Image 1 (spheres, rainbow, N blue to C red):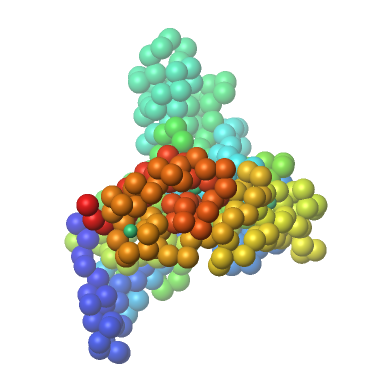
Image 2: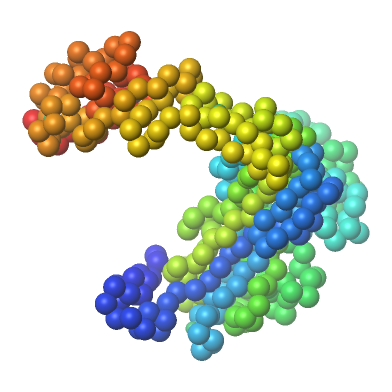
Length: 361
Ligand SMILES: [Ca+2]
Ligand SMILES: [Ca+2]
Ligand SMILES: [Ca+2]
Ligand SMILES: [Ca+2]
């Protein structure tokens, strides 16, 4: 489905040729506002504290970096990756449910979407007909059309088509916001042939709203799922190669050392004066390992992982040695090569990892 980026093959040998075939394109998250104190620098927003609602915008750019008019943008999809919503020190980002009543607020404007949540069953839905648990059940998250039903909500993501910097402002398109349970996906395709050329400035494609919990601490990177979930499509219906997916970073400062507890006894947790947590290892990672539960330190294996007898292969002789190390209360130098996760124990998990590196009979 994807064109092979030729630049990869040439870049090793022909310096200066790479630009000719260099793929471009970027789907970027840009923080634009928050409900409380904050500062924004590029793709990063520093909140004064947790308990805020943050607005991020999706921008598309640079799909024709050499400006020769091709490729043009037929369709795009930006699929939010929620994997890092709990990637800070503490707290989990959440999608809010924005009420429908503020239709006049451009920051809450509901737009075409292709997935919601049934009000009673919680099942994914497109329209009310798919929510048949009771005659009262309806599809939440569909377009907020009158009459509003109690509890109906607009999306936590929307596309404000009227903005002057909207990527498909001048052409007919089919914008869509997918609010299927646990998912948020923005997309659009042009209707007929008028694929826009690269305007050489970032073009707005949609808005995503996230709630940062009151007790949140640390940095959360909010990005996009890799292709084929997040793509730019050219006029040839092919996904453009080499598109950069740029996440936004939401940072909430710490106020005490306790705020910075990373759950590991192998690190010393301190809150710096600038509100950034520092989690410094209490052991020498070059020569030692550490048990994060109790902070016990043990020697690190000198040789290759799994190769207890040091003969250069991981084979059945090493497996036989494993049995004498399994479950041992202290890790000897001979057994250290089996501590595959450098956490100062020899467990079945280590055994499975040793099997993965088995190189001989
Ligand atoms: Ca081009
Ligand atoms: Ca720690
Ligand atoms: Ca060996
Ligand atoms: Ca281990």
